[in-house]
Length: 276
View 1 (spheres, rainbow, N blue to C red):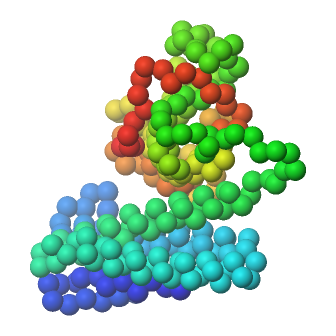
View 2 (cartoon, helix red, strand yellow; view 1 turned 135 degrees about the vertical axis):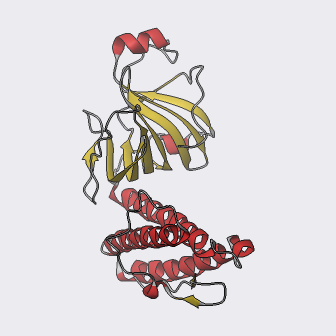
View 3 (cartoon, rainbow, N blue to C red; view 1 turned 60 degrees about the vertical axis):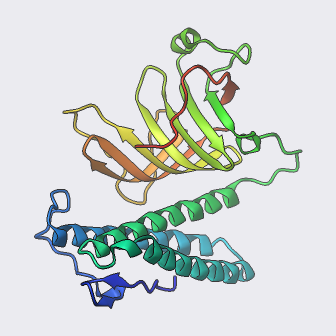
């Protein structure tokens, strides 16, 4: 991918490009960073890692496209890169004369870059969906905006009580839908849960996930690299690029396949509006 040219503040008067950011420094522990220099360095490194992940996803998607589509994607990506850079410069403009300008700018760039990676991954998932000659069946993506619950069990009717869910077991996804955006709690009934935020295409949610661990219990990261790992026994949820942060395990990439789930009543408990 064409390298992004991003102005990064190094002082109150000078700027440089991303290529001139600080090289890896083994003497700085980013889990314990406190000084402005350390925080800025760690924000730079975190952004650069997000950029590398975006590059990998972008390159993988290009291999799935024909030459005309490849050229179109290159144009779109170049336009998006320019938009991201200008948007972040505007977003943090009020802090330009402060010592935290570089930190805030890198945080904005990282946030938008990771979201772009999620967007490209959702396109990749959509292209993998099989083409069928049968009439298309309604999917979760076709639902109107609202709150929903989907369950792996087979309901006798649309209404299922909490007691019935506990007795039957299985996996449950409680979520809110707004356009193609999905935010919800997925988990094994009477077991662990994880918050998922992403986009829906058909019956597949592509995005990121955050699992909250109990205090004093060591966090388990199922996959810290680009390899997907099953989060649940039935492998409905696949996660990767995880990292532990306090009581949270954050997966930058998650795929939840809901084609084997059945819709039931929304229930009395509201889904979250965002993940932690």
